[in-house]
Image 1 (tube, rainbow, N blue to C red):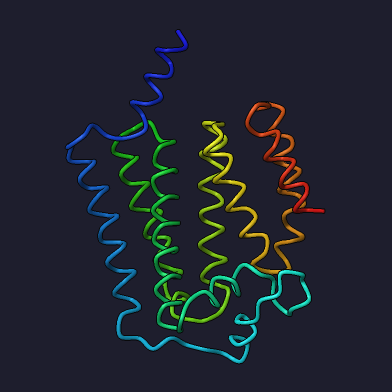
Image 2: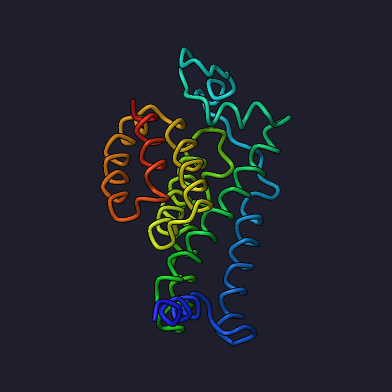
Length: 212
């Protein structure tokens, strides 16, 4: 019985290979990626008075900014590269979220519509990718965090747990406000670990350490 249920779950995750709906999902993802790239091509990266503060790395918390964004920015040679990396993370996060949300929908037509709807929602945040601030990475990591949490809740595997923890840690140290928000998030994960003890126990512990 458990095998038959598992087989049905796996069949629900994606349309049949080569189907029209699968091609529609793929086309939507490709168009989203092209639109995201086109939105930054030829546009000079924008800086604000706060941009310089995101280029100062201090892992001990003595800097004005926490370390996630400065580490990424300082590892890149110039603002053009920073915009490119922000755009790549943006595309990956929203595509992951769209596919994850779609996998929760049983009806294949509604699943394709879910992919398109989530990607269209992502286009509303596309302008942040050309600005050298934390907004683009915060938005992308928030979306990726939601997607990895949904995947972990549905399938509590070690890989999904590791992906969620990594995303949550990066998201936590993008802004000071996120450090406060991780406390209730860690509490929710701890409650969820009651249901998925084997894989979520160490996830809850990791987030609790971050919260402390």
